[in-house]
Amino acid sequence: MMINHTRASYQLILLGSPGDVARRLRGEVENSLMRLGLPKNSIRFFDANDAGRLDLSVPVMAVFFGHDSLAVDTDLVAQLLEDSAVIAPVVSSLIRVSNEIPPQLRHINAVSLSAPGDAIIRLTTLIFETFRLLRRERRLFISYKRNGSQPLADRLYEALDARGFDVFIDVRSVPPATDFQNELWHRMTDSDVIILIDTPGFREGRWTAAELAQANATNVQILHLLWPGLKEDASSAFSHFLKLKRSDFKSYLPLRGRFIKDRSVEHICNEAERLRARALAARHRYLVDSFCDASRDLGLSVSVQVDGWILLTLRSGKALAIVPTVGVPKSDRINEIFSKISDPDLGLGEIWIIYDSRGILKSWLSHLDWLDTHLPIRNVQMAKVPERLSEAMR
Image (tube, rainbow, N blue to C red; front, side):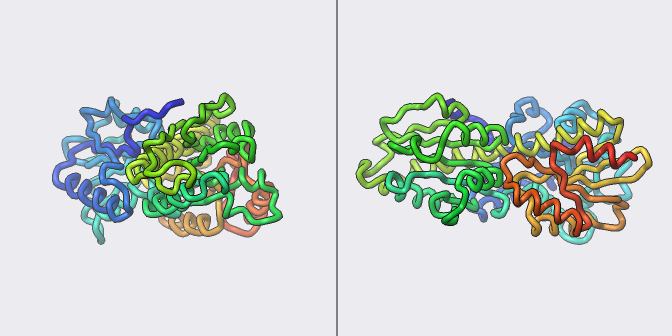
């Protein structure tokens, strides 16, 4: 599979009546991207007229700027809701929601321009949280053969770290006396992108068709760097290949990639970012769509809220907050979610974290089960959602 260089990484569609507020938002988003070390065009802006060019294989978020003349339903908003996109309604004041926002969006907590604090900063934070552009959310995995490409791995580590990635290197980071394959799959599950530096002899080492299939099953994207002279391998069919050439290096291979050119490193980082966006979209959509489908099959009401969590309303009227969590749920993340959503004014009964358990260590799954008995929040494997929903309805 060769890489398509034309697609956007992250997409933000501005709907309703944008005006000056949207211009200020765009400026703040671009400044925030630059502060993170990301190109300011990492997030591509759309409006209603060019919404047909959205690419649903990468993350999409919408901001709807309310206005008195726009409080009617539209097909575009309906389509975005059906695609489980996060939509942030923006109103002049919370008492104006019914006047400025279409009925389709009135079940979503709106951002008020008249509320205390800077609404533009609030919206920017929501956008970066939705696209998981904060460092703690940008996990990337580099796998390489130490005696084949150590300098190149080090160079990529430095460049990706500067771009705000939390980079894990398998040769350095897996402790001794550890079951390498199980630890590898666990770490893969907690990453969005894997960079394989494929040098001579690498394929005969730890990476096999099983690891590649495991990554594909959990929607982790693989950027497969082919050393000059190496060819694509049938067992790597799930990879996105990037062929390195002699011209990518100032000095050639005996130095194991030490003198790779700056522009080549930048190209690799750009491809990692693009694939990371695809992984984020696919992994998040799997959780959200699967949960919403299972809920609707049971006749339950669900809606994706502006902070990315799902409001589930049972037939009894009881409301639950469902939080899709990509990767491995950890206690600090669980605490953060609980602090954000456990607002008494929301009137929520329970908070569930839903996650994909494939690839996670059995010891970690047991730990999550133990946490369920001690915390006011539930960790639910995606595969067990139908069973848990049936229990909640009793």
